[in-house]
Length: 166
Image (tube, rainbow, N blue to C red; front, side, top):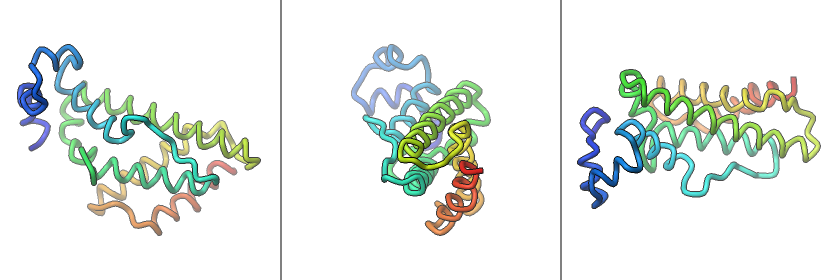
């Protein structure tokens, strides 16, 4: 229905909760929507891909980013673009959530790779998922759909892994 048309009242009604209950948990609509997007992206127990290889972890991460952007199974970050542009609170919340999660994922993936004996630049661990997010976001926005697996593989093989090994 669009961010502009969503109200805390309508969300409370759908959740069979009072408006006061909603406001005890979330100060406003922006916080509620940002939390819903975060929960959709991470699930109840956030996990970080652990395939046993740096390449596999980065491919899985690129796929998760694409799902979050398009909202295949829930809210869509792409669908919130106008709201993010127009609502400073929502913009700051989403930016903070994306960066914190990206950096956490990057640090974990790189720490695991280093522990497995991969020769990588751990000092670039926060940058690698930022780059992945930017590329998948741009491709999704301009092509209207999730990048194909071959495009995601190219991202990992030609950009992300060289970035970590440079």
